[in-house]
Image (cartoon, rainbow over the protein chains, first blue to last red):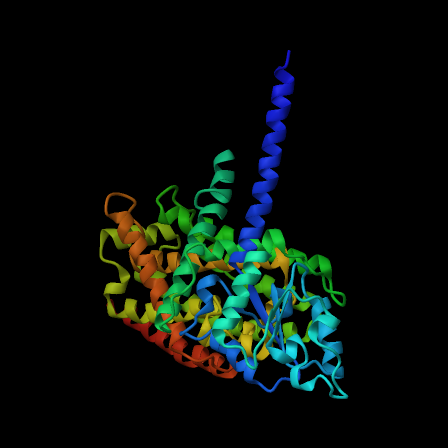
Length: 159
Length: 310
């Protein structure tokens, strides 16, 4: 008599396993291949150089599947550094809207996180998290490549 | 009928070429990393990239363009690559012999992915994609004649056989074509041709990352870009396999022959990767001159040597 019920629960379990597995698989693949697009605001170029340092042979972020891509359409992570001034704000919003949607935003450096030295400047348009939602902050002026890697590891663990 | 579907979708077709091509693509990235004293990505990196693009990311359609053609172009690219792969791999694996003249069919099928990239790029309505598309078109016009000369040389060398299985049988009965002077010259030309076909570094102006930010693929995202990645993986396997069939007497699927087959493919990919890692990107004018004058000259010299019987 309870054969159909058994079958049904078994079937339900299968569906749930499939869903969990599927979600887990998607998340796993996403974590394993983060492609990074680099947006430089009104930066002093120190953070840019430290970001490029992460991709050099010494720190080699490609071993985690992280690549620097040229087009925002391919990006999974948007790195923003530098103070965002009034002109940059429009560009940053446009770039963010053009990105395909599971996208993580990382604010790098003191200027990206809070505004740093430029907080009271008359062209300053607010730190990055006033403009777009930010998933991780990497403070420092400039942050060391090790700090950027630690930030990305935390981002991957929590996403 | 069922066996044909199986050939197309599973064994020498879509699934097999995709997996083999993904591993070769990992091999390419790993060798690149080792050349630059880096550690390199893990083995399954191409699979992670593909499934991330296919399952997770959103596909954005162009606003000022033709969405239907934009989405159909990657499908055509995968289709052309898989068809060429089936026609190349069936004689290579000795499953069934090809028909008479399948070399010409393979030659035309191998250009379908490049043409669909152009169509997709022009349908996206992005100016940088249009620049990339025009560059790809110029590149096709410069290397296709050279590639045809290589195939003509092979046909002359094996004694007017137009099908791949006869070419492989002639080589297995005698010696591989790469063991002769004309064979070496033709092999050098063919390596540069497939370098341009795959858009690897000396000839990667269509998707130059630094100047036109991926060029022809700039507007692709999500599942459409995953299909383009798939077509690229498949091309990365079948073009070295085609060279192995033309020059290195194909595969023998028995005993240690399997090991030799894998080693031959790896050797061709290694040569391509080393060329890619030790050269800068040339300008489109230089690439056209390189193929139209120098490579054609080498191919014609090789054909003349073949006519004298070496």
